[in-house]
Each structure stands twice: as structure tokens, then as C-alpha cells.
Amino acid sequence: MPTENEKKIVLLPDTSEEEFLAQSSCVLYIQQAYLDTNGYIVRIRKTKINNYKKYVFCFKHKVKSNNGYRIVEIEKEIDARDFNQLLPSFNSQLIKTRYHIEHEAGMWEVDFFKDSNKNNYFIMAEHEMPEFQLQIKSIPDIIYNHMLHEVELFDENYGSYRLCDIQHAKDILKTLT
Image (cartoon, rainbow, N blue to C red; front, side, top):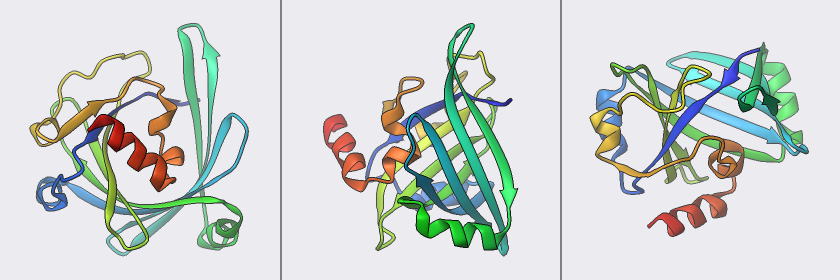
């Protein structure tokens, strides 16, 4: 199974989205929703790139491994009908715009989390690392220049399923600033 191993960096709240748009190799518009579960994550996601839409069902779970813990992530593509029929039963939802930033050390994704008025309420950069890599090799200047906080690995407070709660996201920002 694939193992999720992401390095996350919270960006300053006043970071310009236009700056990331100008440097992005791809822009994705994402709607996702989470089902309340006990100890694991069940998510559905609609991703729009230009006129193409993709729908995905995802299961994530933190398990013990020889090196401590790892997050098993299983994704399966679903159709629009399944997504739309499941959506009302998923209690936590979010919308975000994702910018891909190409870098010598690999792809970075920068998410601008949106409230119901499409205003940004949280901004976070992520870099997917190989399973046993514990540190990032380098950070793109555009991210480094707007960096507020480097998140510890496996800190669940910074998962998108927690950041659906706008008050939780604002409380994090208040603590960090």
C-alpha cells in the first residue's frame, strides 16, 4: 500500500494567491468532504483542472510499522453520480484552490482554503516525500518567503479533515501569530 509522508508548511495569512498563480505549473479546484469516523479518514474529492473533472474516494489510516507509524492511503476513482449522492451524508466539507509549484527537490502543492464567500482562511504548502525520508531537501523560495510554521510530521491538527473547521484553522493561526 502507498504510504503518505507529507511535509507541511503553514504560510502567512496575507500571502498573495496571485503570486502562486503566476509561478504554478497547474491549478486545481478541489471540493472534498469527510465522513465522521473513529481513528481513520474517509474522504471523497472532486478535482477540476480546466474542463476536466475527476472524482476520488479515499481511505486513510495511521498504522504501526517497524519505524513507528505510517499512514496507509488507498484511493479509488469514482463517478460523478457516486460523488454527488455521497456528498450530503459527509458532514465536513471544504473548498480549496491548489497550486503546483515545480522545484528541484520535487513537486510542492500549495492549498488556499476557502470559506463560503471564497475568501482564504488558511494557506498551507505540502511536499510528498518518499516513505522513510524525514526531512525535506529544500524549500522553493516562493514558499520559504511566506513561511509561518513548519509542521511536525503526523501532527493531525493540520490535516485537511481538521481544517474543514474554519474556527480550528483560525485558532491555529492565532496561536502561530
